[in-house]
Length: 218
Ligand code: DX5
Ligand code: ZN
Image (tube, rainbow, N blue to C red; front, side, top):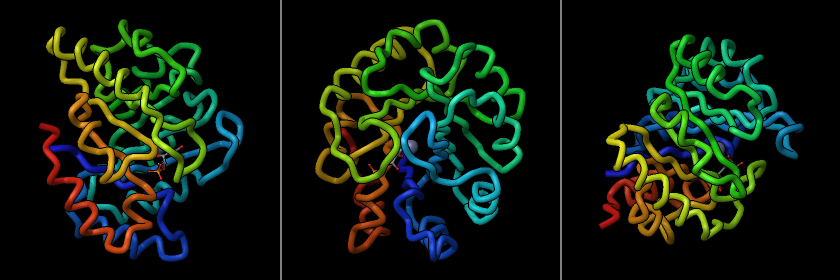
């Protein structure tokens, strides 16, 4: 069964509490939280005080996706805010191994995110150290974009390496994921599906989550 991670970025921020309660009552496994700094990506979302409140309200595993430059400066703050996983972008880290250790020292699981142009082979020497590979299937910065099909090749490639080395690293796919393409994403080897617009903008978000959760990828 896939891990389903609705992305709060697509929620109605005017009723954030109700939206989180809806996720709490649903079959979702994780809550995906997108932090954008307006530098690494051309958009600003929210910071540590908001994440802290989201984490307080969430009964689900809080999966924080940092789309920020030099994330080391804020790892401690987001761990304190209640992040269960912190993913940083490989493109934003000069000393990725150090950053991964910092995340773990602060008690969170560690994920590494890759932009659509970044080759998964770059993860080879840290793959055994991380809990999660986050493969972006859109250029980060905005919700509601179209899934980039080459992502499927990247999933297959990294899945092969994870299996060959007998690692537990999960593969998470983020951007343009919904009921129309989730099955083929799972077939390629993904473990975690992030879904923003396809959940929150659907007529019945709880039902959409349930449908995503029931996919097998077989
Ligand atoms: C994009 C974010 C995604 C986004 C996904 O920069 O990292 O997590 O919220 O939104 P959808 O599912 O609408 O593409
Ligand atoms: Zn994200």
